[in-house]
Image (cartoon, rainbow, N blue to C red; front, top):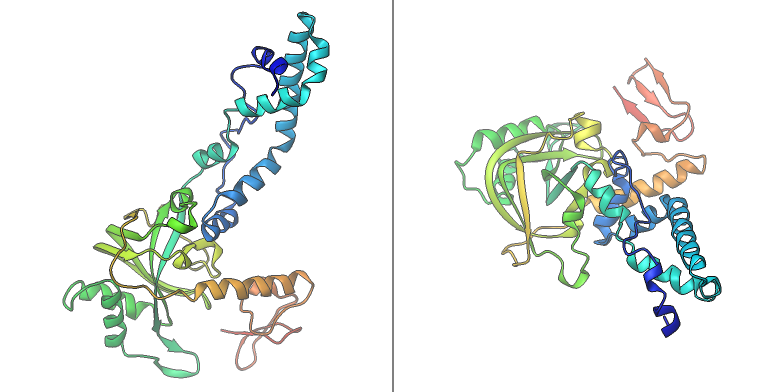
Length: 326
């Protein structure tokens, strides 16, 4: 801003608010955007959306501040200077804006159900064979090892977990969080560890077929932080908390957590859920094009599905042949 314009800054309001987020506006219905922020370790996607949502409001408020400034300058006989420096005055209004729609939306939002995958797959029963893919003893051993427990510690809880997750699945820890606390916004200096403590919700969940079980175990467990293993539960089909169990949002409040910048010993295998999400995106794209895919077990991505009482009884998609046995 040149010298003449600098002499005019007093005409611009000292405190500017271009965005006014209603207390009822939040991100509770936008967990897909939260997932994008977690994946990219950045709030950029959310800011893009928020500025688009409030674009009209921003434009209206900017017009109001410009008009207020113009009238103030006209009353002092400076109308020509306003016309000459309007763009610079507009920039000053932006500089003095103290409102942030993203911060307000986050402040209005509830916690989100997350899970952290331990990268361990438990093999359960299969539809084509009458026995488990691995023994209960082996499955319990894998759970204890992942949770850094010795034999004899919480054996009953672990056996309950394994035996009730009859079809197996991925070993996970569920917790609630404000999603922005899991965004470091620094790819070169991301979190190094994540600690779970309190009455920790441990689950074996099969997102591919929609089953699982969970228990609460008093733990204090610090693991290496691997962003690829962190997920918004609702964004992984089948969602364990919602689609499988129909849980209330606070169901995993008992798990306490914190991230750290000090590296943790040990390692965590990469979750297969990232690949599962990519496959889900492909299925969704095909469905939106008017078609469907054999083997896609999401009932909602098939049309004209019919039930048959014949043997074996179940539902079949007449277009691709996908079958859901009773």
